[in-house]
Length: 405
Ligand code: DSN
Image 1: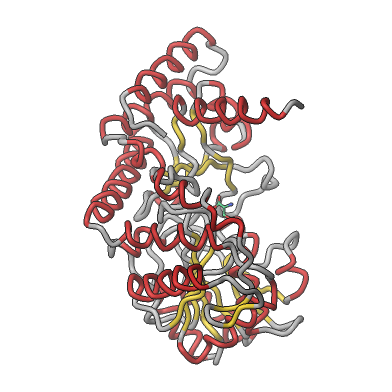
Image 2 (image 1 turned 120 degrees about the horizontal axis):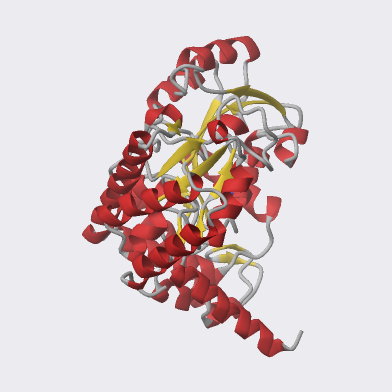
């Protein structure tokens, strides 16, 4: 491939992002000033170690940037300690395991079908092969977390670590209850807020920071920053966590990403950010209600967050099918396992829909309702290519009124 083709493909991707409706709940549109920092000269510098204790010379300026990022995350989330070096949320989680656990130790975490993350102990993840995983799910009737069941499992298995937090759980999580259970069985308690970090920073979703020993997050989802991970923890675990990140599981940190994380923190302290997060949740609730009115099964009956899950098994197609059909009209969702799913994750009985990205582009509540109606139009008229073309044109029209990407 000629190198010019790379730039051509980036342009094509930009168009796809511009003309498409992005409902992938883990994605967002990062502001250009943050993207500029990611592409800055900071990328040229090796920064192994901590500020003031590096393995390379020439870190005077980057040290100040990393110290600023640490202070900003501590302040925003009211945390004792922050490590801003993890390259991703998965790295953040593995650093926590490396800091606190020995191979074979027991982790109590949410199963994948109920909303848990791969790194919380899925069999195909290193977390599932290094540690003994006991899983909790949701109540079959309410599809909500069943805290009595978690308590029962905790007493029975005496885990060393209990994890709360998920990739596809749409409801409020009672972090206080989790911490009480962890305390009763003398387990560490970690909250993974990768998805809800933005909502928490804006104060519209319960923060686990006061309750959890450790909190991990990513900065690219609702937080609307660069791709990357952050670990927040109690003061007494700070040294263990820092050592586990570097040299435990990483070498050089990414100074360009750390600067961008600091900037995203500054932006998250702005009042506009609170308005944005409120709109994100209002749009998700409106979409869930509209799907419900149109006869769809919304997992757990609705949402308290930026995402909702649809159980689409009654349509006689899989989540993968829906993903592919909607992609043809430039609506992007992802297939997702649903509680007690009998299909393999690559097919999946559901789809996950998130509003963080479209609200960043300027989507209104009316747009969100229209998007649901377009999706319904597609799914209830399978094979009607003419109608699908019309709906694709509606997608283009909606996105043409939104902000640039
Ligand atoms: N894969 C991400 C998500 O979509 O939720 C989490 O890592």
